[in-house]
Length: 141
Image (tube, rainbow, N blue to C red):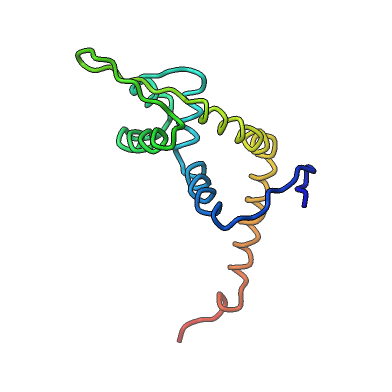
């Protein structure tokens, strides 16, 4: 069987479901992809990385980096200085994940205005339906 692009779709194997689900959860969480993107092709110290990921708390960044490091997507290098200097860098595996997600990011950017308009129309229509629904016109006695 082929996908929409014509590439063969790998045979479904039950044993593949868990690792696929786990990685989709990783790329679907709020901070992992933003952290990988902020690192880009460079090595950053924690403070610089924290400033590069808008809205993330230090605690959440630490937790995100630990998970990314555990998956082999980021490396953490500690230098024996006082105070210790710690730097983070995307691994080749992390770079390949960013490359795989790049078409999705491009699609989102290209379709952003249409997505926002669809959401506005949907929300407006849902509000109108809610306001005109029969139960909305009933009065309590």
